[in-house]
Image 1 (tube, rainbow, N blue to C red):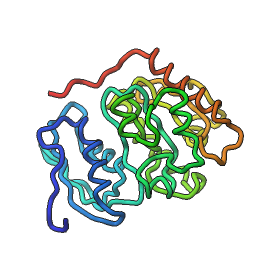
Image 2: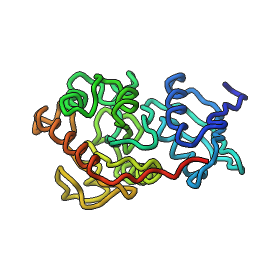
Image 3: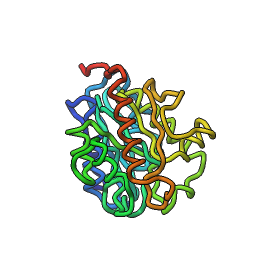
Length: 254
């Protein structure tokens, strides 16, 4: 794609861009570079910061300063070894993980490793009905997925605190824009690093992007302190929090 500008979002609302960028991520290999011009029908939130947040969430690295014009934002991008966000407006629940594992990044699905109990817990709690299929979960259950940090590491402990802080700011802007009914942070470490170092699992006092937050233990098989039944309970409780939260829909696109 060298020398070619790839245009995305033309004539579409900004809320379509995350899934368009996710498709682009899956069509490329790590290390591929391209110049991408995002040119959706702008809404009140559209700006160069939102464009940068979207490409970071989609598993890309911006290689230079963005070029912003009245009707588009142009970015020089590199596809990294990562996962893309699976998000859209009017989600029931946004799941926020810590960062992708190599196994998940290679397969293009969060929590993909057989020993990880996220998907078994999601099926048991009813927040999803198809195993390891984030697209189906988003379309049929309003279950979105992102991570605080998009850089792939073997263990979450390899992520710097500054990365969690920067990622939290991006997620807060994402939630404020897409307005899911609630957000569920999976893994205590990220929330404790940025928000409350004494936080325990459950509903949190602090909201994110104006939406309520549920914090639950990590679903990794390495977390021996939480059984599958416990994790299913937490996901179910997060879904109930979402269902009892007032709808705060994003502004309609023009």
